[in-house]
Length: 449
Image (cartoon, rainbow, N blue to C red; front, side, top):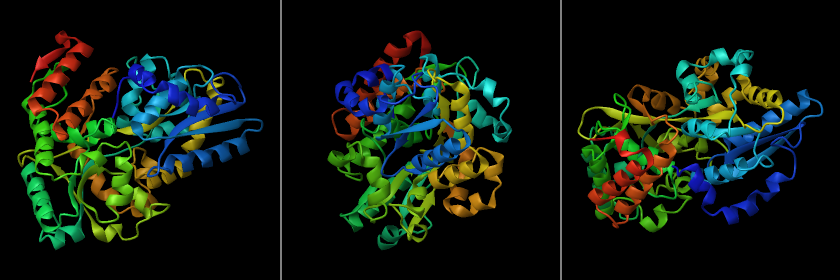
């Protein structure tokens, strides 16, 4: 998904500043102690946070006379969201008091001085004891302090259209055990129906971390290799798994098993996959996140037939050695310039009452990280896909939790896009990534794979 925050703040800053100008006219960032500015993401396929924030605003203002919550929904896909958020954080006059923060950004944003720790407030909050240890770890900065309260977690796997599979003579209980099984299914579908996109694995720079995490890292970690060797805490260069993952992108592109690059490189491709291509039966197999069905249960993208149409399969490792997944998640964090930190935390607590937490877990398709939601029959019965995607947790991996991960990760989509569009071979794309990696962390912090 991401570029470094410094780079993000520079790219297109002139045009983005105009879009943010309206955010700076009321309170926030220390300008008004009675106003809490809340910044979060909203897209055509992701409205759950907007609904939660509107509900929490109404409840908080009703309980706190004289206080105003200023909602700043940033309508952008993920990389563009980080860009605009970085611009907001660049000035105390526009910085949010409460931030919808990706877990992988917490360490870098805390180190950059954009966030302030929550520990003094969490000790007095009854809700904190409900969170599992993994969720608490996800909110930690390099200094061991807590900077974010988890909104849930996720996993990733394969979606497949059972109607398309049946028409192509493929089993509707499809359970691939290797990359070759996936490719063979895609080839069969291509031969049976040339009007259907056989397979989507995110490849573009425009999709940033979606490409890095939902796409490339789902492949890399299925080879047995990793971005960072956790036993030495050194970043890996030249690994065979990295080359093999890029090789799969090359195969998909050369055999035309994926989408047309002209479409797939668009920043809105992720939303199109979930709200158009899958529901309209134009895409057979998608490697994607656990939250997709939440789009289809109700709202503008409601798709009543999804339970009968869509099948789920665990993502197999490269050579029939098991399964793999990636997990992440988002938090609510407090901005470093919050004029009234207690009020900002009180808003976070209001947004995460048991009722609100349950609502968000349901509507955002989140895997529960707090006991009251995880044990709720209402939660378990709400979305039939929860059981499957929760079952992937034992196979899951997490991105390296280092401040420089976002900068390193930004070079992954450069590699995948160059291979997918035929501009570079896997070997050349890997060499370019390795060179960028060494430039970021220093050769002494890398090791050959």
